[in-house]
Amino acid sequence: MFKKAFLLLTAFCLIFNLVDAQTTRLVNPILAGFYPDPSIIKVGKDYYLVNSTFAYFPGIPIFHSTDLKNWKQIGNVIDRPSQMNFMGDRVTRGLFAPAINYHNGTFYITCTQIDHKGNFVVTAKNPAGPWSDPAFLPSVRGIDPSLFFDKDKAYVVYNGDAPDYKPLYSGHRTIRMNEFDPVKLTASAENQILVNGGVDISKKPVWIEGPHIMKVGNWYYLYAAEGGTSVNHSEVVLRSKSATGPFVPYENNPILTQRGLPADRKDPVTSAGHADFVEGPDGKWYAIFLAVRPYEDDYYNTGRETFIAPVTWKDEWPVINADVKEIQYSYATNIKENKTPGLQPQSGNFKYSVALNKPLDYSFLFLRTSDPSWYSIGKDGLTMKLKSETCAGTGNPAFIAKRQQHLNCSFDTELSFDTDKAYEKAGLVIFQNEEHYYYICKSVDEKQRPVVQLYKSGKAGETELLTEQPLTANAQGKLQLRIRSNGAFYAFDYATTAGKWTTLKDNVDGKFLSTHTAGGFVGCVFALYATSNGKETTSTAKFTRVDYAGNDSVYR
Image (cartoon, rainbow, N blue to C red; front, side, top):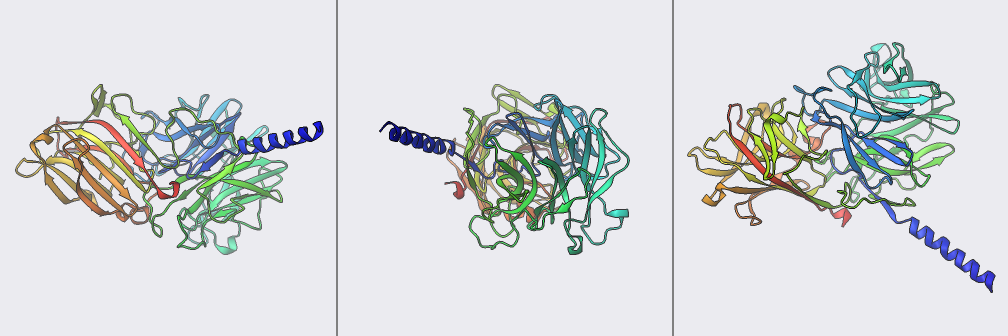
């Protein structure tokens, strides 16, 4: 009798523990919105993740987690203009593909400053910063560098030119390796080719990039993206008994891709690749990677986002998302969730409100550099001086942004701004790049009557006035402005009385802001924006808060 009761109790405990352990679902994307080119490292029980930011400043956000689900941004790697700035760069240039590593008490991040000095490394003892000034690596000629530490040796591995600078076809690249000195932060002058073209050069593979090396058991695994960062994107893997090769490709490559799936599948995820592997807190392996959520065909405005999927080991090869072809919007795990009270979610549906009477948090973005001379924060809000620069140029306009993180969302603010000059404007912009944005703003018309206006960007800094409405006398104080996204369409609203919204214009073409139309590598951001359009002025605009709410059907 006792034995039977004991066995029943044991079985109950096992079942209870299993159910209790499987309470964490990893929801994709784990970082919603414009968080491309992810790289991850595990140090003890802590995980640190970084992403590309291109010409936005501060550069390279760094996130921390203990459960791979709940992520907190703890800083930015490039957070001082003295480290570097991106003045003169188009928004889709700047910083490409950072990689994070840890060795002997030091964190290392390698990255590419495209079009300028190229590849560099920065270090820190604390991942929250401060990070060192960049040490550039002139002998590492290419993009997407990452480090690998192997006993008493260290290497930098990266995407390089075709052999002898003679590509056999468009997109022909190599994966190369240089020895790296982790103390002097220098790379050897000599390099060797680890991969030529891709896993099978006879098939003319393109854009082998984003490489990493890891050692698991007795094997060294070299894994990289292949196929370009659009719908043909993929991840491939090779292995060797030596860190320097020769590397043999997996016969069932790619180990991750979404190409070839039915285009009409429900809630598709596409363009998956640029992966990094990590062992989870449950002892299982996971891959983080970039992918996108289109609302139609290849149209998406939220940019390339950070996703996660489980890794299955098959005959000592890692395969991502092995059980189903389609990337899932959530995965059940045995991970114990560690949720911090008050932590802003980065996945699923969420909303937030930020009072602009305190220092801006790490997620706010500027264009190309940070210059506190044109804005200040007081107890009643954020005051921005109108600058002559516009967001159509390549300077540092009065522009402070947050990412669009859902297909269906709204972003609003409260504005105090008065002017008698038609060239002075302040409001909200939904911005993809210098030639693809919409701007809802307060200004005056040609007769100096206050109006709310909606502009659409054009070529070479030109803008088109889509519509305007006069504002009544009670709008001389605070005005609320709101932008709503509904996949392929945007709507623009205003309110002269708090909460009583009037639609200025709806069903505005959202595809104009898509990566498919605009090109480049970034995603849309909502920005507080004030400009005097090339003229000098002393005028200011005050913003008291920003509110965001995202509500995508796949999470309901």
